[in-house]
Image (cartoon, rainbow, N blue to C red):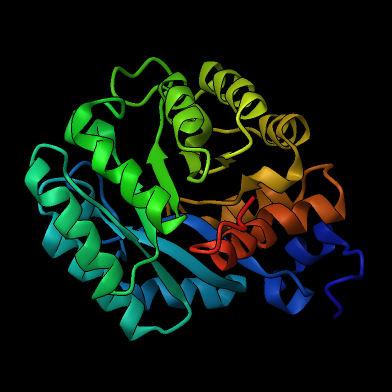
Length: 279
């Protein structure tokens, strides 16, 4: 089926047709790898994830391993790189750093980009309990600016470490860095804050990675921010991506908007890394 042809999205979902068989290039821009101490993840390994991706027709997932988001950064980044090597083209790696070890931040980023082949950066200020506005993250912004890359960060409304509003000054100071606000602030107050922030900063993107985000909010985020600056993400393997496929596919958004959010925007960002052409 041609990618230009308007889809019967509801029919495709109800029939269980994989997205790629429907001509949709789906890229999960916010996924993980590995187990987590705080809740049970049934199949957190790369092979199991690829099997689910195949069933759903998701062509690629951008991943950061759970250890890399917390204390064991180097080992966690190695896990991410191993999955990328093991399944060429199916995974793209996010490099992670821990700001509590500031002397390691820049060397680890260089190692991940230059030796492990990771083109993206993922931060989780809440897990490491360090504000995204803190000085230890300054090398991240400088490195991201030099490499013209994408930084995905966990965000949550009211958080002292990663409330959406903390990203406004960063986006203004680093216009050549693309910021993705993970979870779009995590709850309605955060969605509103994230939408407003994206309206002021063209280098801020939002993602739809949130289990409790209703289709009404999905539509509002896409309509108010614009379909060109919203990304589909799932938190896979924490969350079942089956539901998150259906949530976006069955909205009242246009066929064009759904295709952009499901993967075209992510593909464009990835293609523009290093060239200054992401925007």
